[in-house]
Image (tube, rainbow, N blue to C red; front, side, top):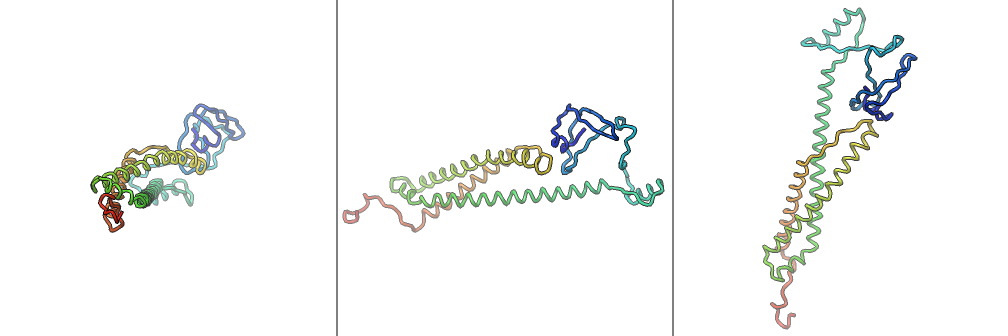
Length: 246
């Protein structure tokens, strides 16, 4: 079995032959599986002990034990007495796993915070853009009242346009976001780190974006409602003017 880094470096797939030279002995073995080894840049090969040549001398040997209720100090002292050596290098995998889990938890927390901040900034930018867009056309919405629409009908039309704008931007942005995610996990990650991440889609998050877009559209409508009801110049119908005012 080979790790993902080695498989990507030479491109290898399950069933491909792999040539190894161990102690001047040439071995040609099929690749049985490719396993993930995240974050390790070195290539690795796992082979059966019986396949090693007799002349092969390992640089080091290691084994794993389950300490049970014993602590690392007790295990280290016991191994030193058993092997009659001054020092034994012991790696506490349980402690390493706890530290790794803590680092991953902090990383995921930071990722969620960055996602939230990015979403807030994007929402504010969309709100300001939509408000400015409709503010420059406030005069035309006032004309709708002159042409016979009631204030409620004008606001309803404004709300439909605002929701159409924000939802359209969201629908157009989703394919771009999915494509950028694909580039990150299948192109940039393998080149930068030598391993890839499984890509998944989250329709629930898309639903959240849709809800945010609806809220932004309604916020634009409320802002324009107060703006249309302000003291700005309002168009009047020519039929309501006297002859000398026309």
